[in-house]
Image 1 (cartoon, rainbow, N blue to C red):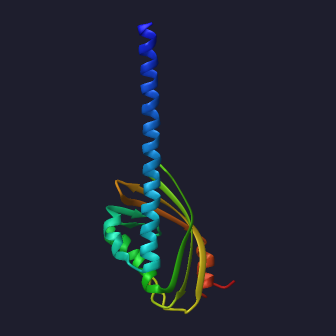
Image 2 (cartoon, helix red, strand yellow):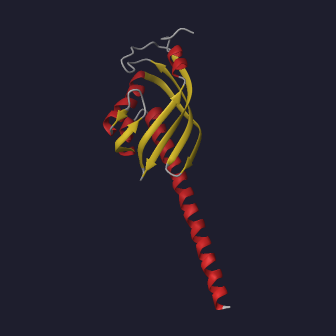
Image 3 (tube, rainbow, N blue to C red):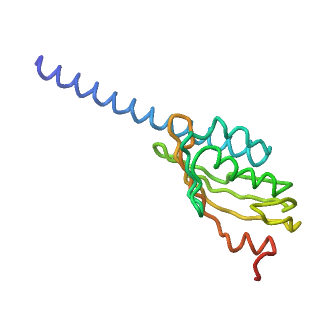
Length: 162
C-alpha cells in the first residue's frame, strides 16, 4: 500500500510539474507577443526607433537582401521607414507565439514623402500586408524575417508598372 501511495504521489507531482512548465512556456510566449507588438507600435506608429536600442540583441539579424547584421545596422534599416514615410499606420492583425518564436500578420500604410533607402519621395500612398517571424530570447529580438509582396509595394510607389 505504501508503494502504491508513493507511486500515486510521484505521478501527481510529475503531472503538476508538467502543467507548471507548460503554463510557464505559455506565459513566456504571451509575454513575447506583448513585447514584440509594443516595440513595433512604438517604432512605426510613433516613429521612435530609439526603442530598438533596448529591444534588439547586440547580434540581431534581419533576413533581408543583403542580410542585415548587428543592432546598429538593424536600427538603421528601420529608420529608413520612419524617414521615408509619413502618415504611417502599422496594424498587427494577428500574432501567435510558440517558444521563443513570434509570428505577426500585419498591415502597413503610409505616404512616401521622404528618402527611403535612397529612393526619393514619390508622394504615393502604400497599403501592404505582410508577415514577420521573429525570435525573442531573454526579452531581446535576435532575429527577424519579413515577408510581403515587394512587387506590389514597388507598384504602389510608382516604381514598377502594373
